[in-house]
Image (cartoon, rainbow, N blue to C red; front, side, top):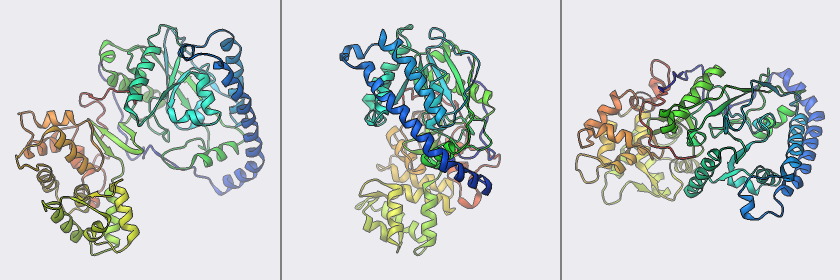
Length: 504
């Protein structure tokens, strides 16, 4: 099955990880008056429901051995406790203002679709979808098990737990998910949010392949909040979760619609390529929602655009650094000259301490130096190469050709005139100021004739339909604007083969 068509995000669809509740004076006054009355009452009633759920959740697995806990719960622990927990779960959302949950379409049974894929994921309140889906099992962060009540509810749900920082945990989670989805009805239906993080709901970000690894049919589920005032969303920047909860609970009611789409059965090509399967389902759901599908994702708390195997930050760290250099010290050019001189001094190398960074940048404000240090490093030493390359590009002092030449010579330490795969990854990480772990496709393209030279890399980055956005957009001088002439931020979903199929 070929790739489905895609929409590109344009200026009409802004940064998907920013949402700010915008209130008129009348709405703010009305919310304050209603909030004083409704919020304490609603939170108290929701808390009461959670307190009732807590012991029931613990009771479900009480007395069972580790071996029994590794199997689906059956008997009275299911037919007695499951309906009660579903009722209490619905009550929580009822008391928070979700008086009605409109359901469209038909939920597929377990044999038709062992996994439900829900999007867009916009808020922790999306858990309301668990009620019309009959409390399916979910995947959650292992850190959540230590939270009061939440940990008990995850245990009740027999959730698959995964640590985002432990590769072994991710491998174990992949095995668990695959085992459950291929159990032929032994395990209950699973529900997954393939975006992996919350957005403002104005675009679908890249789906992670976890729900699609087994190559089995899935049922797409659309989640909408058709309200005049959008209060529920909680994203990387903007309205905090506390503000979202207050604004939502202070409304008389909040509308939510859950729509079950027809079951999606993968082709053989999609079964063989979970990334392709995920992308096609993403586009199908985006089309049904009337939203663009993008290659944006959250990588280690940094919003990025996936461009082939590259991860391009949506916001250049160099922008803040450039503003600091322009506002304090002798200027940008002097700082760039000192940085490249230090990088080329073989004896000292390109890494500097905080004191040396102060001298190299020429900044007099200690807080400004600390800000730059925190932007580029979590360690005591700071590598000057990414600062020089990104600030040099953004300031307009360096053309892309001269920028790439400098980068190439800095990372071609042995002077061979070519780079290996590891050196290319380090070079691209410096150019984009973000770790690059999947540059295999770029290396294969640039080393098509056996060696990755400066000329071959320049050719790929300036002419290849996928990678030219690096030169034309991200490393463009600030004065020239941050977008190419067509206004598109470079969504090249699926332009190259995928080499990252792990569960994230």
